[in-house]
Image (tube, rainbow, N blue to C red; front, side, top):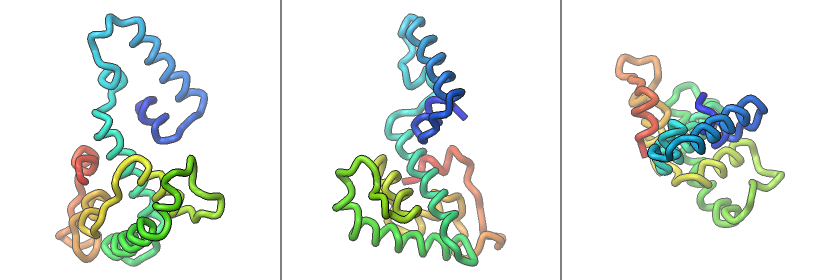
Length: 153
C-alpha cells in the first residue's frame, strides 16, 4: 500500500513510517515542481477522504450479518441513520469515539470524521461494489473496480 495512504488509514508500523519519511525526504530534496500530494501518489484531499470513508464503510459492512449484500446494505443504512441522529451530534467534537462505543460505531465515527456518510442503500451498494438489488450471486451482480468505487458519493 502507498505509505502516505497507509498512514492516513491509521497504520503506524515502523516500516510504513520509514517509507513515508523517505518519500518526504525525496520530495524536500526535489526542486518542488511536483505538488506534494502528487509526489506521494495521492489524489486530491476530497478523493483521499472518499477513499478512507469507503474503506471504512466496506469494513463496517463486513461486520453486518445478513444473507445477502443487499440486505447487509439495508441494515448498515439503518445503522448509519441511527448513528447520525443519535450519536454524531454528541460525538463530532471528540478526538476519538467514546470508550463504550461499539466497534461499528467506532468505524462510522472515523468515516464521518473524514466525509459525509451515504444516505441510501443504493449509495452503499455502489460504494461496496455491487449494483445487485437482491443477492451477490445473481447474474445482475456487478463489481466495480477500486477506481470506480472510490469515485462514488
